[in-house]
Length: 399
Image (cartoon, rainbow, N blue to C red; front, side):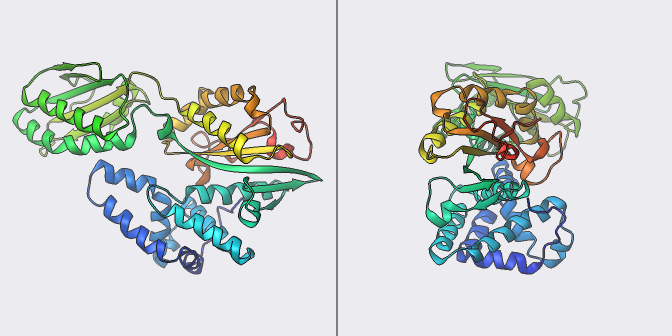
């Protein structure tokens, strides 16, 4: 695993930028434009592209000298990419560049590439010989790891938590950004502290739903109504009566989260004078299905990317999660339960183990926010190689 205490050098990041080519500068300009301003959508862009923004900021030698352990870890992945590129023949190096360019375009990030590099480093640290067969030989699996005469195929997949959310965060941010200017005007005319609760039975995952909900909120405020109900959404406007919420202080977000739960989407708008507060809280009619999104990807990858001739390890990176969500998925054993149920299905017969990690582990965040050993690991007890001593460091279930 890349050493967290390594002191990155400016040359490391310059070589990585060279490896990225012109795509790097273009990407940084695009992210900068999308993240500009104080909008919630802009902050979401900053969060999603935090790794890329950190690498760009750390190109400044003064910033690099003050890099945190998490930032040094990000730099180590960039250095690993450069080192890997130097060992690959020209066609394989071209495929690596294509992966980098894909991660620097559209809604993609460098997370899948860094997940691949991190997974390889974890296996090397556990005594495995690692080959990047996906890049070198275009195998469907990404890595081939070997130890004491036993070999396994490793597939690295990145899954967005958005795939399991009934209300997409991107759509929520877009809604809040649309409503906020109107709220400032409305609060100036109606001083006070308000709570708008929204129940969305079918969730919110499309632009048209954002536009329709924005229209209904605007109408509710303009007509000074307290409630608006339909099959698609139930809106209810009440006074904000949380204990200690006399101002939008630091304790308000925590109190809101405690009341509405981790799956609620929350936004707090404060009037310019600081005396009035408008809180929006939205929940879907069903619980999120993030674990189900993971098992869907497991089924696809197991059938499409493992040969079946060797034991397969599916390494899942679960992205777009905050610390509380990731910790809750582990503590409730929701993710473990879903993966272990999937392992009883025929689609899992090629898979000897599944590993799960998030940005917490990638950045070296210690427990309880990060998982022990840098990942969650679940062994498939029905696989013939489940008891292999040679593969044990990579397949034994997490303690």
